[in-house]
Image (cartoon, rainbow, N blue to C red; front, side):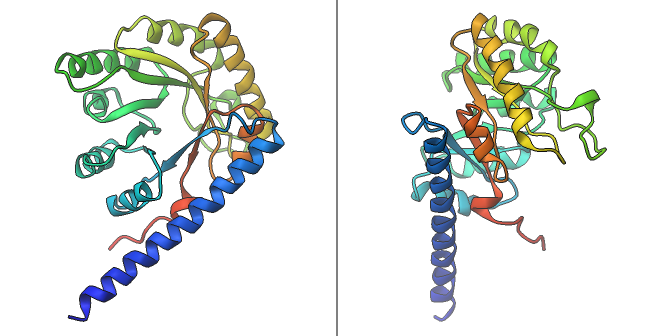
Length: 253
């Protein structure tokens, strides 16, 4: 008899924590949008729920969150299946192996990490198969662009994925040519160990060039917990926020 109240109390405590964190992030987004002179065009919030349980996603949905992001297919597929009763839009935001395209096509409305022709082709085929089965709409594809010099970050680490800026036009044409895909825009992660503003300014320039050829591809997926203000300043339309809403990665065991 004593276990159930304790469990409910814990759930209520977690919901309250998420509500407080979510409100704080939304306040930051509103302030950044106002500062950038775009209060009438605030970016969409994608809550990145990787490593956190499906129960947290359900709590977030109850708080009004509609878009969630994951970066590991196995985890994302399981959560999407468990939470199929919720009206959620799933975004795949991590590096994606070509062989995982078939699985991702079953649940993801958007992939933010398209960075090579082989992945475009695999996604186009997988999404077409799902469309023919009557289960989905076209997939939004963001071209992930590497903003690091020579493939390495300023702290000497390996790069965080993405195509070179020079590769963007070719990838854009390939995505636009696939009837099962929609070219949404560009995505990038600011390089580690460097101020994010120059990177996001560069991404905005790449986006502007893309839009001249593909007017409908104006979306910019950029900005995480530590740099959302800079991303909003340089035109981000989609923010990918994880730790500032969900907290640190849960302990395993």
